[in-house]
Length: 314
Length: 284
Image 1 (cartoon, chains in turn brown, purple):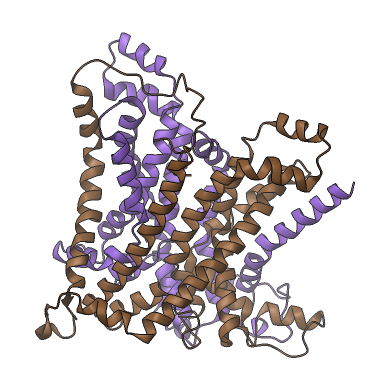
Image 2 (cartoon, chains in turn red, purple; image 1 turned 30 degrees about the vertical axis):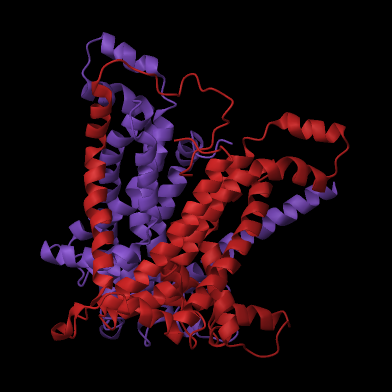
């Protein structure tokens, strides 16, 4: 959605900015950008710098007397902290599972919606439902479904004869882990589907006709025609969903609170707990910076891939 | 033939996947507490009641104590969310329109860099700026006010707003502006009477994005608010979840309430969203 891809060979007669005379254009452009630049500068750039500065301090709201500059001590203590290392492992596993599920389910759903069938409009509207659901409510919803005593899943599976006793889904570490990933995927799927659907709608019909003439099967048509056209939107999906999964917080916070044990204690949950419960602003900032650096490295990687493919237009 | 069968099977499967989980909390929200706890569960409320929804307006004494007054606070939280989300959308549209117009109409030095910088600020996780944000808002005495939330959500939504709008603005024919200029129409009047009305789908898509960002956000709301004078519905919904004595039926009703306003908005504007997004978004 945010990154525009345009066929580079095709000039856009109407859309491309027309070169205009006068020296004032650049000045005028920056004047028009000034409000946005001021807001973003004050509310993002300055806080980022300040948070880095904080991360070099021992700064705990509860212990104001101990406040002092400690260089990179917070970062050093992170690297040797088993809680941090385990949460890093959980986060990476979470991101991978969420990405795989999102891409597979999202592609399948987008392909279905791209066909014509009775009730397609209804299904298109239904796709928007999870988008309208705040992450907190999403967490609440799955908690009532996976609840060990009153949950819908246990009741359903028992009535179908698939299990012979109620399961405590959320109290087993691997169960909780996959349930949070599943809940996250449900919540973020609409976005993926909208982007992939927009990508699918741009594939020229002749490509499929040509493939049919060549007697290509369904699978061949998918790998030879659909997939190449879908690569770019998929890359956008990967960017957005990696970011989302890395900072996933609200659904997990409500669903498992990071437990049982450390099974779903992703880095964002750990970060919030450090800041909110322990009011340790110095260490909390160091956590934030680790998340920031990882996400920035990944986004720069993705964006430069887009550039190399010549598919970014700004 | 088999192709059709597979297609319908998949479509029905996905429809169930999307709807059934939500159906379950709707179902629970109309149940009595006793029925919600029954084994096996009822997949239809056998004695449907609106009591859970009514108790948000008039909670009984024991309900009022759930989740630090979450029950009585719910209507106010919905109202707070509406105010914050609408304001965020408006602020974003105003700031975003100026910036996006410059990208769509003027060729200027550094435009590419500036666009990437806007995009990169969106890549910064909220948690990374939350502490300085908190300290700044405390210094400005804005904690626990709408202002703190609207400002933070603007930083989340503005980059996306600018990207959506710039793509849409590029589809507006330049001749219309030229015609307005010939008629000696000033820039602001031209924007207001000609340009913006034509850009309605893009503006709606961008506004809904900002609205949803603000409506769904939880982490900043958790940090920046402390009382019902600014707490949003996700914060109150989380209070239901963290209270051990919570009534599941009440919690379900609060959850449904939190989904309905954005859902209605999205369904009404569905066509405009797709139209607005398709303008530039993912043309491949």
